[in-house]
Structure formats: C-alpha cells, structure tokens
Length: 446
Image 1 (cartoon, rainbow, N blue to C red):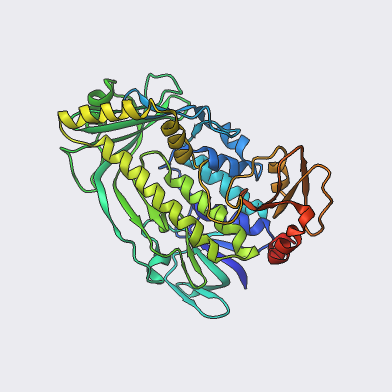
Image 2: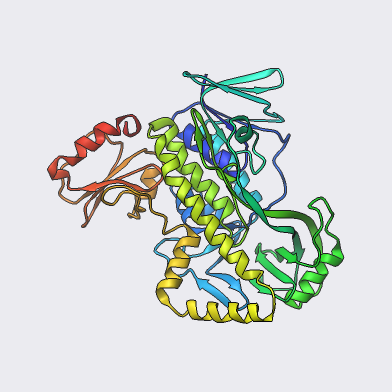
C-alpha cells in the first residue's frame, strides 16, 4: 500500500508528490493525459512560491528560464512596485508554465515518486484504514488521496464536495504572440470594450489575455487571428504578430467549502478557482501543495483546511476585485477607476499590502506567538532541502536533541521552523518550552 495517491500531474500534484517522497513516503501520481501538456496557461511565479522552491534547491534553475519583473502592472500606467518585498525574490518571474511543470515533475520523480500517465480515475472508496482508487480494471490502495485534478476534478465529484460560485467572465482569449517589444515589457490596459494583458516570456514571445464584451462566444469557439489582431491594435496600438497557440476560456470564481473529506484532500484548482488577475492561480496551488505535503507524512492534517481555506478565500476576493476594476463599463466608470487607483497607489501602506498579498509574502496562519510567519534566516533554505522541522537557536543557547539540523543566529528568539518554511513555535529554549513542543511534533521532527 502506498502512503499517498495523487490524482493530477500538474504543478500542484507534482509538488505534493515531491514533498511526500522527500520525507520518505511512498507516493504515486495518476494523470489522465498520456504525456505532459506542451501548452502553458499560467505564466507568473510569485515571490513566496520562489521561496518554497528555493528551499528545495529549485528556484535558481526556474529563474534561468524566464524574466524577473519588478513591477506588477494593474491598469495602464498604474502598478505595484515589488522591489521592496522582504525576500530574495523581490519580483514576479515571467516564465511559461511548462517550465514549472517539468521542474516539479522531475523533482517529484527524483525524490522517489512514481508518475503513471494515461490513467483516468473512475471510482474512489475509503474506509478506516485507507482509500482505494479505481481506474477501469486497475486499482491503487493508499493511506491518503490528494485530488489535484483541476477545475473539473473527478476526485471532488467522487467525494461529493460541491463547488459553489459563478462565472465572472465568458470568452476570455488566450494567445502566445511574437511582438516587436522589449523582451521584459509587461503591459495591462483597457478600453471601452474590455481589457488586454501582455506578459513577457523573455524571448520575444508574449502571453496575451484579452476580453471584449462585444464578442461573447462559447469556449469551444476557435480564436481567429483577426480577433487577436483586434485586441492588440485596439487595446495596445500594436501590430499583429505571429501566433503559435491560442485558446478561449471562461473565468469562474468558485471554492470548495471543504478541502478534506476523511482521508481525501483537495488542492489547487480542484479546491479553488478564480480570475487570472494578479497571476495567483498556479502559485496558490503550489503553496497548497507545500502546506499539505509535510502533513501527509508528519501529522496535523486538520491544520490544512484551517490554514489554506482562508488563503483561497482571500485570493478569490483580491483577484475578483482586480478583474471587476478592469472591466468596469462606461466613461464615468473608467474615470472613477483611474482616480481610485491614483489615490490608492500614493499611499505607501496600501502599496506594501498589495505587494505582500499578491506575492504571497504576507500570508500568515493563525496560532500562538509567531506561528505562521515566514522564517527568513540565512542558510535556512539549505537546511530545509534535507531536513523536516528545523530548530533555529540564538547563539549561546544549549543544543536540543531530536531535530535533524540546528542553525545559530546573532539575535532574536529561537524558532522551530516547519518544512514549508513557516514558524511552528517561537520562544526561549532555556525555559524548556522546546521539549514540550517537540513531543507533540515527534513524528514529523524525527
């Protein structure tokens, strides 16, 4: 019997599998596609996601595939400066999702996970001892199952979890276009009929996301070159370029009320979906994966819903506010939008809050003391690559047995850092607090 079966080999599923496997767990990933998709829907990797990847030794390799952009465009000239973020990665990395997919799948396999493709899950049954996953005449048995199989999640449907919400925008155009712009040029703009977004891939190709309220057709309707040309000319004043791929989708806002039913968990788009504004979708899924992965081998499973569900809700709200801002109709509405943005972006605390929220750097989890804060300690990323919980002690403090690694800092309290880089406990080891905490975390800390 495996420890975990993950359904879905996208970035969320492979990130979960990598976390379970690197902790010594047996994990298999099942995906209905015969081969990885060569297409890229997402294109931006935010700072918090890069911090998580850095703790596994993966960030620098991914950064080499794309273009760091230090300013997140909102509408027209309005944008949020990311350069002041308290992180080694004060930018959003523009890179096609295919690079993230390949990196995380390779990491999962290198860590010991198995990936089986061409497997369409058709059934699921759980009992007190585990879960049985069915695909035709084949079956897999595991202690836990993770549904990371996207918006139309089969796992979510099989466990009877609803997906309430609504469609916000229909007939949104996606296209990859070669344009005569600076390779790092990031643009967002609007006109009276809709909006357009251009994200650079760093090699002369750009991801276009566009919407025209006058052209509302089904998502299966092909995107013609004339439609792409119209968006480029009308919104940006740019000539038509070569198109290598195009698609159309509907933008929904939905969230599962429960991320866990018994031994089955939901993560990524299977748990929440929202507008592409702010580029938070893939990032939130990968962060779900890191928040769940260590729990599947170390315990504390109830904490996953408690921590990650509010984050999903917050992302729905922020991305929803941005997309509504971009699509406000009428001349008065556009003038009001410009005035509101100018006013807000002149207030430094508002800018800092926006940068922290969109990048994921400001995410905090509920708990006592410093629980839930990010532990940014020199050298910690290297320790996290090979260890579970990490104890960071002030210089001069006595050693504490039972943890795989110790780091010393010049000042500050002692920190017990979780495998996903958040503080599990903060205090003075001289008081004996650590031993009480360690006894509760023994399965994960050993």
